[in-house]
Image (cartoon, rainbow, N blue to C red; front, side, top):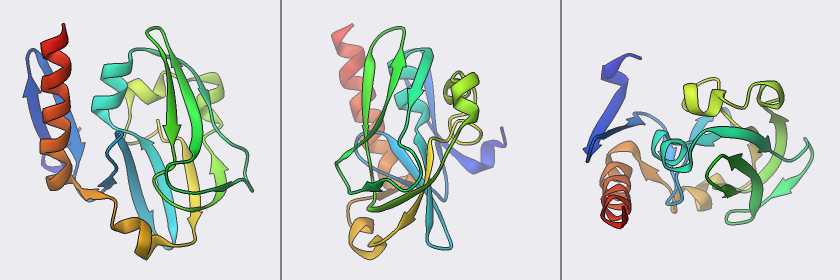
Length: 151
């Protein structure tokens, strides 16, 4: 992992990475935008907080999604995590590799552990609800600190 590509936050004994150049939503999803497409995945924080991924359920290509609408779920040893879409559009591709290797979400959350690719339909509007890596880092750190207090 090239450390220059990531911002880092340490909370308690945990270190969380945030990839620069990606956009983030409040629930802990990242969005990599390229040519009107959004590759979507879970952040390092969300995958660490959720636990070891056992199963990923994501929609089939052609499914329409809107921000806040359920995009799928991730089943872990700790919990079932509902994942809501950060952008509006149509699912173009789902990461079928996760059907056989769901642990990629934990091992490489910003790379091979991506969930879906969405053909965006209203990015200008959706963008207003997304954070840059620099904006997301304190949001994530605050959430991690709250979780640490509960332990």
